[in-house]
Image (tube, rainbow, N blue to C red; front, side):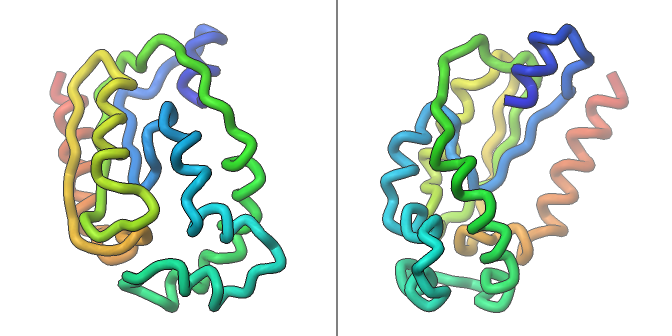
Length: 152
């Protein structure tokens, strides 16, 4: 949506888009119906109940640390309605975790429909919050993309 807003305003556009653990926007209707997502948004649910919905958590302490922020973000996510628009004109790279029960690998693959340029998907092991355990790998891939853009 930020890219779309910048494009509509005639502003300078990003040269590369990166996404991790977030399904392609055209799939938000499906994603909103996942138990783990719906239950995270309920303020009355305990942390234990939310964590109990996931069978694979790689870094429990990290998840507990980010839970308050997730709860604050949930109303925005749950109210989002995708509107079809022209695809992005920059490459898209996505990072997906094979064991992620919240955002499935194929839901990340669907980002390919959101660009007219190159699409890459990198698979790693881990749960939905895999970034904390894979930051070096992800950082290397982002640095490589930036270096390629700078060499043009």
